[in-house]
Length: 120
Image (cartoon, helix red, strand yellow):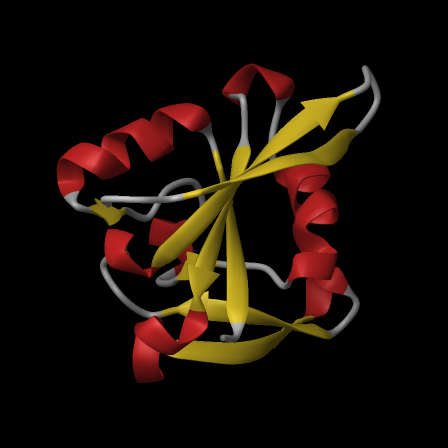
């Protein structure tokens, strides 16, 4: 299973359960797609775009379930590396396999524990 990752605030994750999908948030609406990350980019994404007050966490998403709406595109502001972008109204909850906590040491975020998602 190919995985992609979504960093989002705890309140946006809570909204997802009521909506049935992980909706766009932040710059997604402006940019016209949902920003996702590769595993190796999670911490940089969290540190660049999230505040500790948002209590961010990471969703582990099955990329195969996103189908052809998932595109890998180069991002100039991130050194020309390719990032997964989802051209869809949201991430289906059925595609979310796990959550990962993020801890903060007063300076930077770090990846914490992983919890499998059941009964989405």
